[in-house]
Image 1 (cartoon, rainbow, N blue to C red):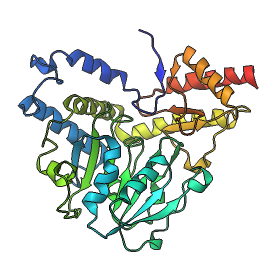
Image 2: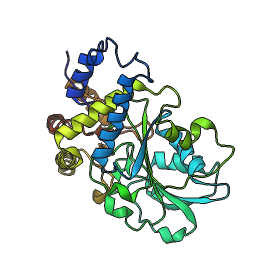
Image 3: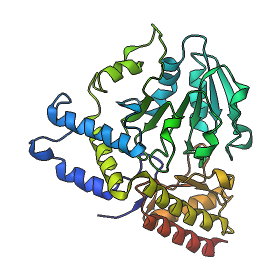
Image 4: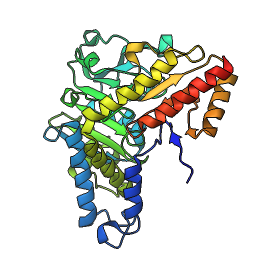
Length: 360
């Protein structure tokens, strides 16, 4: 097999140990004679997989007693509408912090249903930093919405930046959940598409703080109602069973690695190595304010589109895959999620130095 380092922003690389375990179980899970892909979601075997995955993820996040956990379909983008529909009654207002493309889309979607206030934004400078958040500018907001990591631009909201927020806090954590320590009890609702740090695309994790008051909208479709899924343990309809199974394996792998604190140490080491290579380079540049740089998605450019393309093509020949930046921004992007080993980042840095010698 041709071994590569996959720097894709999502679907992203999975831990090798997880893939090997899934391969071993593929035809016959736990002597059941069936694959997880074909067994009934109402079976006792799958019920154990489902509940164990949920419990392990809550353990890792430190919210076992405080939150309900849902496995939903529709990707993180479905949550752009589910959040306001479930948390706001008609006429009630929410405040949004827009720090990248996905937060901007969430803001626009929420505005279709309710009044929304733009609490803070860095769009005017190309999303190159995290703006100051002043909750007092929207005192009547029922919740404040943030995206903790911006996959496209490569910035993140550090945990302490959220301290001033006193309203119920909603967060899209799709691209940095389980990558560094946040006080999860600070949040009231969190969601994350799986395909970056949790598992394969097709399932979305939603955490809802127990006691969070949900809206009472009579026009809310059944499948868009959190209460529907809370009452049925995410089994109202057939869930993406195999995807949830893989999320469970990833959770077990994370526990074996030492949990979120250990992953944060590794992720900071990987990010430091890569940002130092960029900052010390005469060819590559990163546009994000240093204190706001993402640990998960490192974006950089040469300043020349043709040279960017040359770098990406050369990287592919070295087994460094999926380094092309998002179609809306161009440039280069290295996504170094939990499953990306340090060796992969070292290989990328070595190639960057080689490329610079040949092209400066």
